[in-house]
Length: 495
Image 1 (cartoon, rainbow, N blue to C red):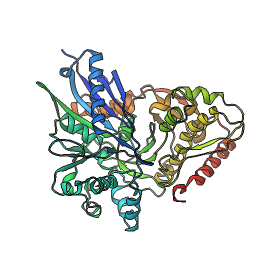
Image 2: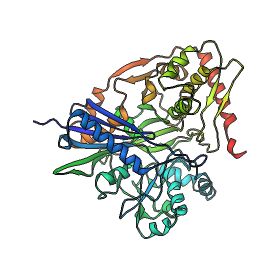
Image 3: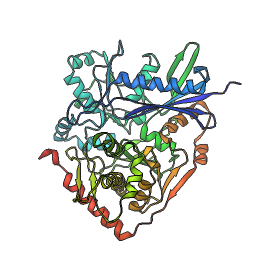
Image 4: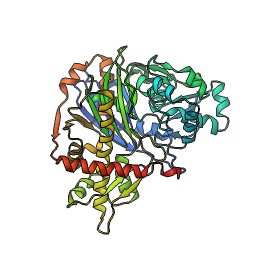
């Protein structure tokens, strides 16, 4: 009998990846391809939607070629994606009307200020779970409709479609037959009511966004459409935004479980079960993955710049040649030099939500070397994670016993140990760190009848646990200095 696999598509902010996963949940192959980052103006970040698709397709083809299989061996497709990134395209020919506006982009800050001045903040928080910020898709949609020639009229005539990256990939995979998303991605647009599970008509009216522009919304595990290759019809049957997929892939399926993903940004999520917890401390409320009608919520803290700060060291400052080099350099630094890097390159996310903060380095002396900057940049991820965790504990009134981690940066032992030290909480690194893509694979496999969530929880294995060893006084002293450094970056672009 022919062996069957799931293709797990992981479309991220800087690269497209595909995993080949077998029916036992074992990764049998992977392929990855980076794509262009475009910065047309200060604070603007764009991607070419055609390049997103071409690189994703190339990795799908490569992983099957390497395994010497074809689409007849594929039982299903799962998709996880960078969230909030906004694409609008023509319904007839599928051509985008512009480059995608990436989640990091700050061009719509003034639109956000207008919405705040109208008094929409409380309504947005209560009904979408979000704060008004350029991070989310809604103001990006408004900007494109107003700024791209003829787009507003075409949208009003029902000729255009909006989608986050999952919707774009589904559209391409189904040959333009399906315009659809899942609850997790919809909940990141600032247009979706997370209580009624429908697009919010009042918010659409306030932002002058036609309902016809928006996709159908479904649970994360289910049938989204079919990819056809000759006689083979393959279901697309698992879809989730990357951070909710990681929460699912880490088997954080019960109330109070927490994971942190260290990718381009840092994203911490806590499963709050069927309870919608509205934050009082700068976090957002979002929908977690659902496998049917039983909806789960999560609290989330989003740190905009984490792994991308390491890319800055490599590509901008050119003081490292690879991300792997950062651990060695951090360990070279001895003594009590206290350098703090606040990587607010795209403003500050949770719990501050300051669109006008900018990056800064504090504590430089004549003796400061490149290794000090590398060490401080790594540590900034851990400090920002503590900012979020403290807010999360206060909002949920749940004490976190363990932090589950994933993402590319977790292979850095220096960072993981410092994270445990600054939190005073054990940090668990799983054997399989591909939890985001595996979350998409699990969602697809559940629909196919391959697995259930109990198997997922039983199968999760820890590769290493990092135990806090830092002295309490030292921990608090460092964190207070970090908080002072953050205060000094706030509102910089407004001055």
